[in-house]
Each structure stands twice: as C-alpha cells, then as structure tokens.
Length: 284
Ligand SMILES: [Zn+2]
Ligand SMILES: [Zn+2]
Image 1 (cartoon, protein in one colour):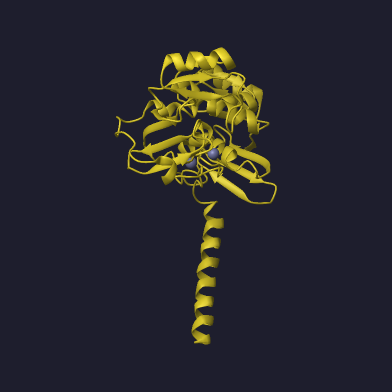
Image 2 (cartoon, rainbow, N blue to C red):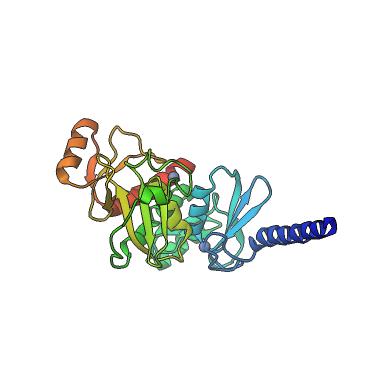
C-alpha cells in the first residue's frame, strides 16, 4: 500500500512538474493573454518582469490587459519590434506613430524614422505614454460589436457568482456596481465593477461578448448595460477605478444622483471607454 502511495506521489509530482515546466516555457511560444499569435511575430510585445520572468503577448492590447490584470507584478521593461527592421526596442523609449488608419501602433528607434513613416503613411508621432493611453482607450471598441441580445438573466446572479472573478470582492456588497458578463457561447462571468469586466473582455479577445448587465446604483436591480442610463464621474469614488461609473434604470434616478453627487450623463460605450482609460491612469 505504501509503495502504491509513493508511486502515486511520484507520478503526481511528475505531472505537476511537467505542467509547471510547460506553463513557464509556453510564455515564449504563444501569447499568454489571448494565446492567439506566436512569439517572433512583428507585433510581439515582451513584458519583462523584475523577477526575471517574461510574458510574450501578441500585441499592445493584450499587453495592456496583462499589465492591468497583473499589476502587482513589477515590470522591468517592455520590448516591442521596430516597424520595418524587427529589432527589439524598449517600448518606453521608442517613438510611436498612431492613428495610421490601420488601427496599428508602429514603434521606431528614432524620431526621424517615425516622422518619415508618418509623412508617407499618415498618423501622429507620439511618445510611449500617449501611445498607451490610445491603446487603452481603444480597448473598449469591441463592446460596440456585440452580437444580438442573448436574452434576459434568470435567477440570482449574486448566488451564482458571489465573488468578483478578478479582485475577489463581495458582489452582494457591491451590488450597486456589479456586472454580469454573458458571452455568446453561453458562459457567464460575475464581476464587481466595469473595471473587472473590462479585464475579462481584454483577457479574452477570442470570446464574443453577447450581453453585459450592470447593477443599478440605487436599487441593485440588474439592468441591460446598453439600455441603462449612465452617470460618469461625480464625488462618489469609483469601484476599482478612478471615476465613478453608475447605472440607473431611469433618467429621473440618474438626475437625482447627479443633484447630490455630480457627474455627467453618459452612455455605455462612453463609460466602458472611460473604464479602460482609468486602467491606464492607475498603472502608468
Ligand atoms: Zn494576445
Ligand atoms: Zn473586481
């Protein structure tokens, strides 16, 4: 019996070791965030952490998602491949061309190269911080492309998802800011806030969002996020974020909130974009 147990231990140990080995080494072969593109591609972004580990991701949006989701990991350097030469550059020191009409963000080792590219192909020459702000601002765009409604939420979403998948916060306590994300494949994720919903959307570019629900600030009722009346900002602190983003069922309820706490009337696309912009403000 003892030998069987010892053998089982060795087998389990080997499996765990193989799994850990594979997961460490997978970093250099596929995007860890979307797992979509192999390393060495022109869009590869390498996040080098202070602890010596490297996360290779397929592009800047996946890099942004990884930075926001694992912000307790200290970043040493982010390297990208220079447009044209493919040389690895320090992203923070590179000169960037954005808004080229292709949705791409192109890095160059020098201002001259960047300006020549911009003159020939269009786009603005910017620094790293402005480029990343633009990346985060664009991360909510796919919310616009959501497929037709997949129906209403049935049952108690807080009972099904008591804690936020990312930060672990109590969704009953944060019923006034909670989000329920339904993907077109029928899976659903429970989050505490738009911030954490934004993380899940960014970390899963391969999944098609179907419908997003948000808890009403005043009643806790789960609302269709696109139909809700939103208030952005105001004197109430946001949940996991800088600016508050609050959902209401009616214009009157939103107006009553704004009388007490300020903020501006908004819509779902705008608050989602603000959630990503705040993500960058927090980690920059
Ligand atoms: Zn990726
Ligand atoms: Zn959360």
